[in-house]
Image (cartoon, rainbow, N blue to C red; front, top):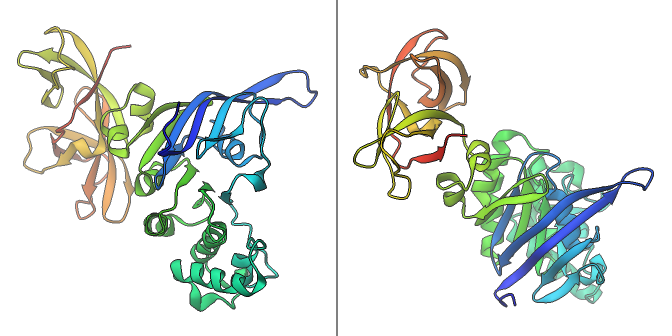
Length: 357
């Protein structure tokens, strides 16, 4: 029995598609479970083809489920025998391309889904939502007159205006440039939280997921590998796939030492009690770019193999004496040349380890 506090409950759903000749079935989503509480923002994070958009389509009723159940406010909306139509689910959708009507102005776009209200109320409700997304001054403008970020906020206001129980967002920032995506991710979280909106979005960009979501589900091959808070996803990945997918990192060899420590090429790190094992055993240690810092005075040297300028910093790929390559974020005023050797040191205070595969 799921709790009433779960606005959305997905229980062991499977979604399948037939191939072109209808002979062979392809399973797109496998035994998937997910719970989203009232007012929470969830995110399905994964690479293309992992099934995340299919889940959104199943929640809003565009796809049928082969097995399992989808419940909204404890009401069964999808199963092998039950399938409520999309307009019966009280679910709003923001599409990847925003899907605004070019022949309607901004106010008319937001009011489009308010046919259940008397005509006299539609304009007032639409204008109220435009104020909530800070676009009241664009009410008379047309979509082509707006920036990409403004179009996105109009699409969000249109989805929220009918006051659905749940908002679904399908790659909402994919058509925007990187700098705008970062800013709008924070803006969207503020809008959703300020209006107590429950939302689920899908993205392939982990930085968007971290900026918006209360809970993240890392997906692969139609399954959620880990559903957790962003901090836990980053610092306590449940397996190698999640650890490798999240953050810029590499696995380096380590040897367990006395005193719950592990020795790697760059020095010693403290282990948690549940990580400690037999002294002398080899384990794999995850080192991310923020675990290594640059210091000209450090005796530990690494060769700059590649670098990516990111504005405030560089992402350096560094080769250690052993030949192992690691990543490091370095402030951009330290502009070192490819092939140059620089000093580095460990700053990792939370160690992620796995037994060697």
